[in-house]
Image 1: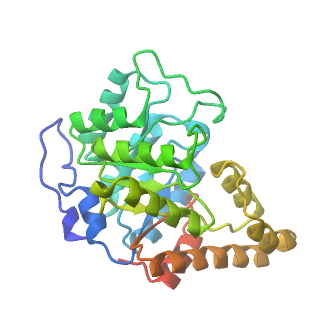
Image 2 (image 1 turned 120 degrees about the vertical axis):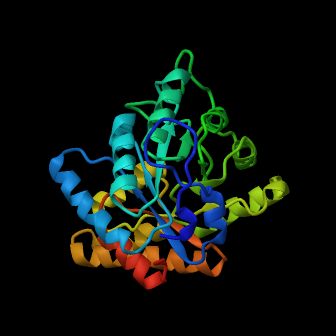
Length: 313
């Protein structure tokens, strides 16, 4: 990993020192690199497969690995455990997802302290979606937080080294329009976030329009990294995952390319990888330097993209 990740000690509970350089600074300095997303595994067999993938991805030197709550929302224990294991057992810098769903502020503070004790100083602050039904009306926990900007401030108050937030190229489902959504993103960044990771979208133009809206809305935030997200659609099952992640937003051009290949597993995989490669090439041509790759806990597609796009550190 980069020398920027060499840690200096920070005040706090005993444990390995968290990296001293904020991820925002690391991302601004990066050139043609990638980050990757992992999720806590469901069982021991899944954990073994995931760790094999982690070892393969480690050799490519991702800028960081974000660690989600897992399928269906999961819980924070798996996030803390996997982030800590990455910190202790690899050269990969973990970024732990932190969500306000179902937790009072005191519980969130305790999670941040546990992460700091494990040497994990970077968090992705997410309001999160209701457990069970992401489209259900949002109701904050009594004594909890209402918005992600509040979670950013709480993480900062608890000594987080870096705080990231989510960006929505298609707009958050609860936003009345894209301009309102962009103002909300600017508010999260001004609350103390170092960077943002864009939710998956297939049309590169949607991400570029988000980038332009943020530049118009908040010129004071020029230079704050916003990472585009890419998920190679390598199977019909993965296509279903992407539909959930994008709120069933599936461009007609993608349907035309993939639908004829549903019965040919190999051809479907190759076409899905080609779609992701084309998007990655366009993003790099538009000046993006770090691409965030959704791995689904497997290394093969990520290795292919990193190799062909020249993103290894």
